[in-house]
Image 1 (cartoon, rainbow, N blue to C red):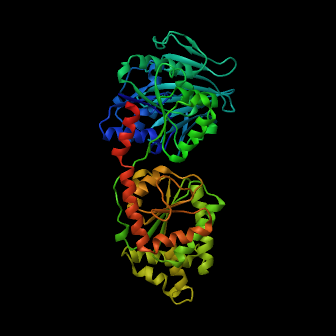
Image 2 (cartoon, rainbow, N blue to C red; image 1 turned 180 degrees about the vertical axis):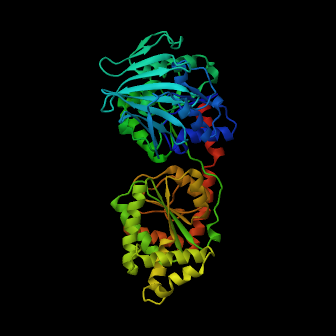
Image 3 (cartoon, rainbow, N blue to C red; image 1 turned 120 degrees about the horizontal axis):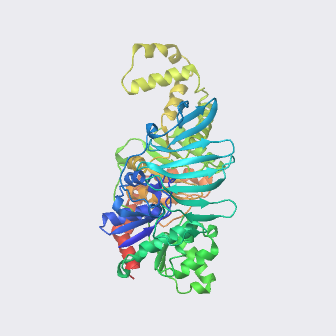
Length: 532
């Protein structure tokens, strides 16, 4: 069986973009047997797992062993399940419930993205503490902190409310295995949680027959600290992803982990070259095997943009910069000049959306000499929308009767037409992105750091891409264009949107890339590594 060790955390809200999860999907679709070893405290794991179609039999939880938890079923706690003094007053907010007692803030009930109670933060005279609840219906952890939110102690519990482990972080840090703790932990005092996690991981691995063990682990610092305790006894395949910054690693742990690894796997040629330089600079790494396996596969899922009148540009904005604000100007200019162009903008925050919209407003309003916040503009916009959805009433026509006679009418209509061809997506799901790519004509990602998963989805949809950095998916002037200066952006847009032959050539190239990065080929690469 294959065992995978990712660094998943409860706060990971974009797990669908994570590489190990994509590997598990590949293994699931190919009937490869695997199990996830999850090493972090994940009190709402069942909801996270269900979100990504992971069965509870497909993962092992280190903290269930550490906390001596044996229950697998249950229901999240409701507000009625919590115990508070009888004189508590409650105020409901969009983010939770604020508790007051005798006109003083007593606590805050926090809800997670699943709509369940994640925990309660209590406010005391000299300190605060946070109770975290497990989705199986019990208190899992109490985190004590100073008034400045510096954590000083953590107390972990089993499903019976018994304290099983105490982690002391101030003074002389140590980990105490309490009386109700797991009996398999023979030592009762540890110095770090990494040691505790490594101990239960060792015990679990010892129960697996040697001839069946194939372990794949990520190489970020958290995982390095734990797996350093097992890599002398176990052969690990290490994943160093294209997103990983090597300089951020604990260098000593990283070099040792590479030396001990059965294989080092990365997902791009560029990162492979970077790792080869590390190998060359460190003689002790002379014998390590480095190979490249894409972790975001492509699948034939061609879109329907050739049957849609509008030419939709999907533009991804990771973090707003001056460079991207200049690009925004280019896009809006093209929307003004080309009425067949439409723009979908993906942003990571509402703040970035607001900044881009304000910038767009300045450009559009200035060009057409209109005020998009005026009553006349709003009346005309309402009239156009009502006409579009065929719900036009006499009152709507009367509202714009005088405006239609003015010189500004044509410009108002043209400006509204531009605004109506701009849409925003804030942190969209993969399903939402796939739906947009199904109708998009072009994908643009000119951020400093590209997104390989998004590139693989665009390839699968058959659409060309404009990027700032060349990647394994993109061949310049074939299925994409590399633009490093703003002056190159508009010619790249024209190349694919105004020339059908160029767009068709990109489609043909993308189909070839889909074959090269197919699940079958990627799976064979993994089998070669794991069985080699």
